[in-house]
Image 1: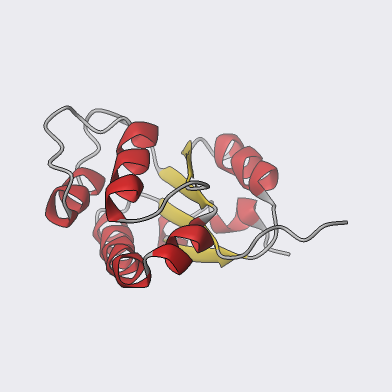
Image 2: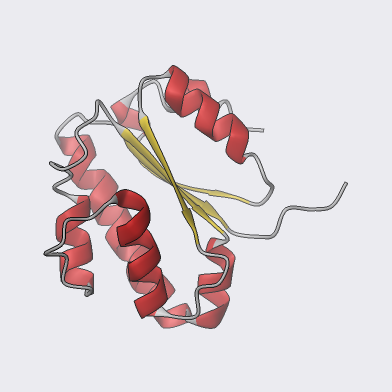
Length: 139
């Protein structure tokens, strides 16, 4: 089990994290306790790139000029002027569904995520992306 409070405590630990079990509430609590903006993107019914971009834009409140393409996606994630915060935790719930339905675009999204967290880390701003890679296991 990850110590999310320790992870979120430093921009030096900014990165893309993959989880396999439902610990969304722990992640949300640690982000909020650490003064970071927490955004959850629900990808439960995402079939492909268009759905992914639409859900992400809606959850993060991308500006109206968002172009619904990968370049615009990257640009918006490295801007965030419309949602100022000390740092960010973006949790992509049900990411595995996107990955199964559209593996090529899921790889593109992952490359962008890696670039985005590096961009923010270079600016000393904590930015974390958490991907739920598998369905939560039943108890």
